[in-house]
Every structure is written in structure tokens, then in C-alpha cells.
Image (cartoon, rainbow, N blue to C red; front, top):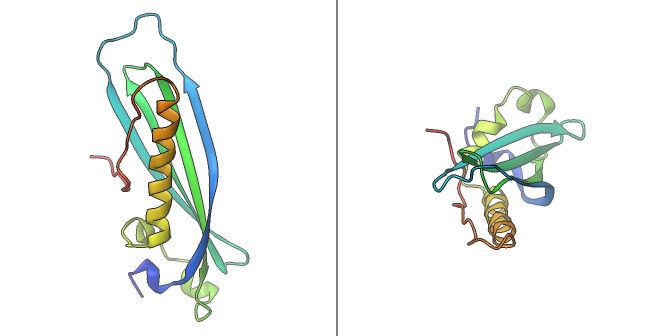
Length: 140
């Protein structure tokens, strides 16, 4: 079994904006300090008779204690498997883990675009833009 995501897929893929959700948070007592909470998630799904893989990356932004806003930005990509792979060869693979640990240009592009949109959206609220790293963030 291969352990490199790039070995399974064709070089080209397509990406798309999946979802954006922005909610202004109003609180009665506005705390002076709050921690920014960034949570990343990744979902993968076999589609098109298991010939393609849908990858959806989501970054959620919130604050503890709650203040300012809650924001979620989600980008997706469709990857086609190389013609040499069959359903039986890909059905049991944990593609979520493979994608996260890959050095795939399209996946990096998705995270970079997500980071850029978050900066643009947060700056439109009249605050300084929140610039998040263009990397998949794991919880520690």
C-alpha cells in the first residue's frame, strides 16, 4: 500500500469555495482579552463511482470568551484517481490522514485561499485582519 497521497491522484484537480459563515457576536459585557480559537477539519469522500475524491477543508474561528464574531470558511477540491487504481484498491484507505500529511500543491492552495479569505472578511469588520497560517492546524 502506498503512503503518499500524490501517488494515487492525477496532477490536476479542481477547487471550489464550499461555504462561508460569518456571525457577529454581541455580548453584554465585552471582555478586554479573549483567546482566538482556530479549529481546522478535513473531510474526504469517494465520489463518481469511486473514480474521484472530494476533499473539503474547513477553518473555524471563534473567541474564548465569546466576542466579536464567529467565522467558518470551507474550500473543497475534486481529485481524480490515476486510471491504474480500482475501487477495491482505494476503498479502505484513510485519505483524510493521507491528505493532511501530504505535500500536495492543490491542498496547500486550498488552505492558502482559506487563510486569505479569513483575512479579507475579518478586516471588513473594521478590525485588523486576522491572518491565519496557511497550514493545517492540529489540536494540541
